[in-house]
Length: 184
Image (tube, rainbow, N blue to C red; front, side, top):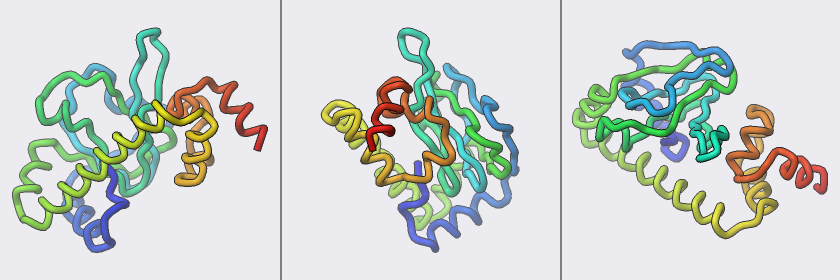
């Protein structure tokens, strides 16, 4: 889920709600949540970068999502159903300020006020739209088009995320990504 689509006031409210929860740090490349775990928490990134990843049928590590400052990170299906998720979380750089809240407490925050409920609903809807758009991109766009879209929409990713992770996120091999970048 991404807080960036909200107003400054909504971001401020979310940060205030999370402020009483523990601040944690994770080292670069540290696995925060293992694959095939049950998500019991929600993270708010204040400083750092985290990726959601999984392993494909060949055992290859695939980047599913990247999250940065002001992003809320969880796997809703796992947290809501308390079911095992194939997705893990890994720090991509030193994530020095990450608020961690238990999912049950997160739900209580949601129930605390209609304003918080609206914000969380907007986050969920925004995330669903992004996932749907990503699926369409993977199925209908060329590797070059996917690269150009990512470069146009999120140019800072290329300074913060290694190219292997970007390549798997885009559904290609590192060599293909290097060729596309070299042709620019």
